Length: 282
Ligand SMILES: Cc1cc2nc3c(=O)[nH]c(=O)nc-3n(C[C@H](O)[C@H](O)[C@H](O)COP(=O)(O)OP(=O)(O)OC[C@H]3O[C@@H](n4cnc5c(N)ncnc54)[C@H](O)[C@@H]3O)c2cc1C
Ligand code: FES
Image: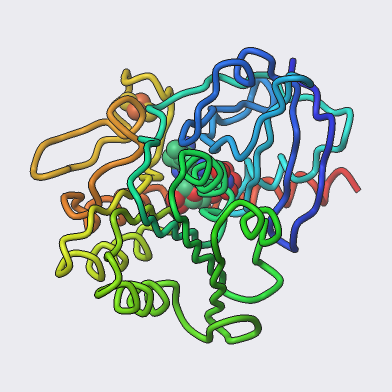
């Protein structure tokens, strides 16, 4: 059992929980994730570790409510427990002194990019962060990312804060700005697959190394089930053990996007059933 020692509501849809998980806290490296299960009948879902506190033996997870399990997770209170927290899973991000790096986070991808921003800054890089969300109330960890980076750029789809538009608009501008000033050495991007695909297309003509963290459907997280398979440069890979980070210019995003919606009908049914059960309890 893993106790929730802190819970914070970040927005209508986004929550932060700090969980007692000593084995993960001790071994975690930026870019890795855990697979959690709330109770015995619960589904296993992957969540990126946004932060750790090795002194307190805790890890921080930030999640967006998108379906039944994240809805259940959001209803847990401080002092409540999760049945399993398995990890750290996946390969850590490549952290070294690349020079000038742009880190792009969209939606809950902002939380996933945060430990990477911190680690890349710590390794001596000049880190420019771009964070974006549908609307201002969904922007998360802005202050934390501001503190960890050289500068931060904000975008919202509806123009309620920062640049009115997409993270890719700012990415284009920064690449142009740095073109005759040493260029950009690396772009890291985490967010919805369509956003990562669009970012890859922005950097491709400039030949800038671009790394994306793939949020494919995962079940065991250990390479056994094949649920997280994707194609990179025409070769089949498993996001859980070969990734989750891959060269964004080589990922077949069309396939990733279509596989993510494979269970859409069943997911809708699970949410409807969960809501009905909740109404029954009242
Ligand atoms: C490596 C990795 C790290 C992730 N990190 C985060 C994070 O830090 N914060 C966050 O909010 N989300 C993260 N996700 C996505 C998160 O796992 C899904 O939002 C969650 O599983 C949805 O479950 P649900 O029952 O609430 O929704 P459902 O209604 O079951 O599904 C809604 C959508 O979530 C995705 N999804 C559902 N089940 C899974 C699954 N087993 N594995 C992956 N995706 C699934 C699908 O796109 C699906 O259409 C991550 C995914 C991966 C693969
Ligand atoms: S999640 Fe099962 S093989 Fe990757």
